[in-house]
Image (cartoon, rainbow, N blue to C red):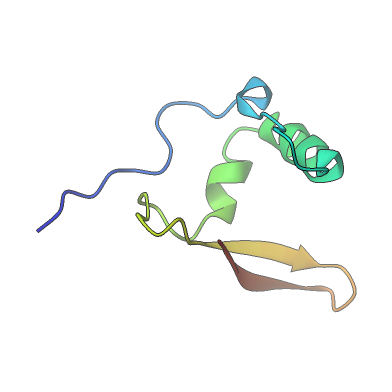
Length: 74
């Protein structure tokens, strides 16, 4: 059985976020902003271990419907 490795180690910091080459600065800025509040990023991730397929289940707020929903990031 493979050893489970935690997705996050230590504190999450706004300086941990890197944009790379995608045109997603709006998303990166939002992630960096909520990373300023301890525990928020960690609480969004429903998947707690590193997934070798790179798929992670998260919980986001849908402002149009005023409710939280679960999404899979790939």
